[in-house]
Image 1: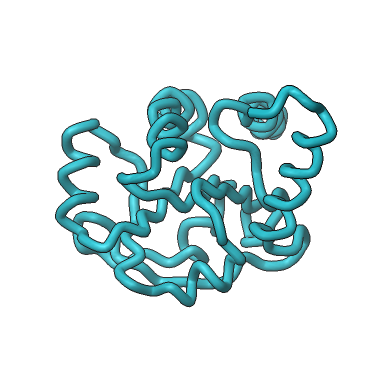
Image 2 (image 1 turned 30 degrees about the vertical axis):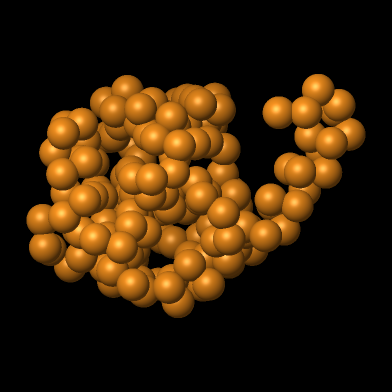
Length: 164
């Protein structure tokens, strides 16, 4: 929130170094349960679509602020991008109640104590976002937050529509 541009640049660089998987590498694989109890794999989710992956928690104020923007993004870009949110909360019931109360209907997974996944994605702060191309290669790490990502999604949508 600094008004000094140099401070903003420093913070951006620190966050990027602390929270990044190498662009061009394959996204670290994982299997997690979604909030309905179904096992989901990143390889399945990224097979044909881009994946917008985020790590978040119900107790994280910046996460919740950005999460409010996700339904509109999902409705507009869900045909082109798979939205995947990984909750790092300690209790699944809290996540389930939160998702139900807010009517969120994209893929929401539960970390369930799998802290290794946070290490694999070098996630030290939340929210953290990644954009993964079809086939599983990371193309943005970290990716812009929902409040900043629309221009990137517009390009993906345009590219898809050109193929048709």
